[in-house]
Length: 183
Image 1: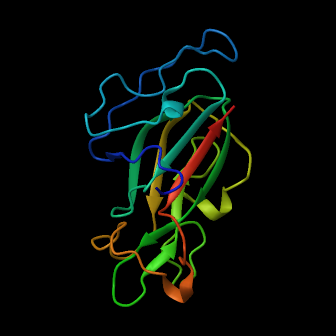
Image 2: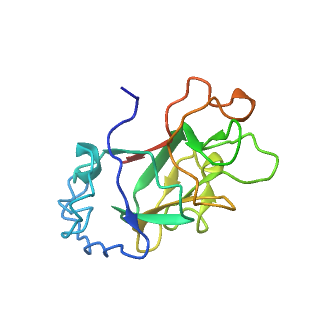
């Protein structure tokens, strides 16, 4: 069994459902629904991702890497304190050893980086390597989690045919994951 195997589904950015407008009741127990009322049957959340009481601990395994960005059915509220951790590897396609680290890939072409948007805390999609371990505070009106991937050919990306990767960077690695804690 791979580590960090809590959730593994997302919604295509073209079919994302808008999140309900949250209305906090009291600090620490906001009694808000952090995901939309209507969720695709294919979408699975770990128990921590759907919590309403802080802290919220959510892990996304195998984030979508075969398109530039994906909106996940998980929302942030203004004032949320967010910490992100991420790791693992992704199949980038091509010939030979083609797996790359998701956060800090060893590549000579400035591609293959995992990306994230934390509303009001990042300026749009930011490279995970610049966000991991850095405490952030959600600003503005909050919003949905968006994860992205930087590549020049998305059609052959995924989590199939594991190899050790370019320069053995994925030797004994797990598939990519993003771990978010909100407090």
